[in-house]
Image 1 (cartoon, rainbow, N blue to C red):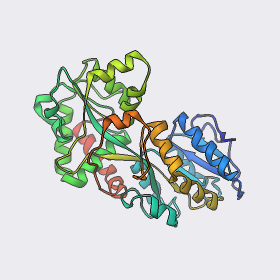
Image 2: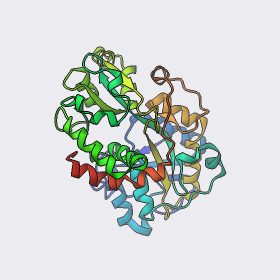
Image 3: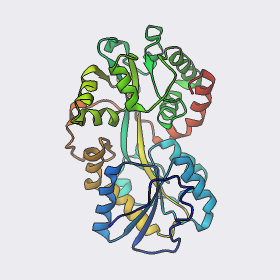
Image 4: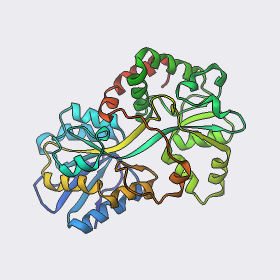
Length: 339
């Protein structure tokens, strides 16, 4: 059975430390991935291997700070996050051990891994618009969202959120810092209101006519599409969807990923878990259970929402390079007033 700690601040859980002694039948995971549907992943891994999973949930920055403070005595075997930038921060801090696995090299595409961490699922940053207020041809790229014709029409979450910082990192990689800042300034000029809430809040605001267009991670829309609630169906019916930048660098994708902590007491079990995440069974679960795209392209989907959303051209930039631009994106977003 999976052993899951209560979902509280990691600092509030300081007294609930895992054992830092090696045990072939134990795996300690620090996770910033807070989806209840993932319980099946951990349960299936334990069922297949007999390895008990202890999990500490928290925010990315808190988990990183905890691992640093614990130092060589940290019980953490694996760090999981839902953003490439945070994985790269951990890597640059020297927290990850090199990954050496023929299974991962064969299963995970090169653009979704670095020498020290891998992505195991992806989500796309799409554009959703109100079909009564905005024309699809107005919003064919991220750059279009800064066009003056959309003044007072853009709803978006905070510019400091990792999802938007990664998008900013992609913009910098493809078009340079100067154009990225000009885009951010134009975007801010088009805000319908100050940034607030999450991606689902933006989608609902667009559907309600509070604004005309937003950027959202794809799985939030897919959740609404699969919902049985009439109010969620109504939101979906009001929205049009665009895969941005199909004529240029492709739609931006972000990832969920993980790395093995350099001081991990259970390195063998940790590597076994990462290889398990690349299996067909686990990969299909990311798609069917949480509306993400598998990192392994050959895995067949059984998700009507993802099928309905269709295929699209994705950005091919390596996730490691993308993550390294996040700090630059934060600075230029701040200068532009996207907070």
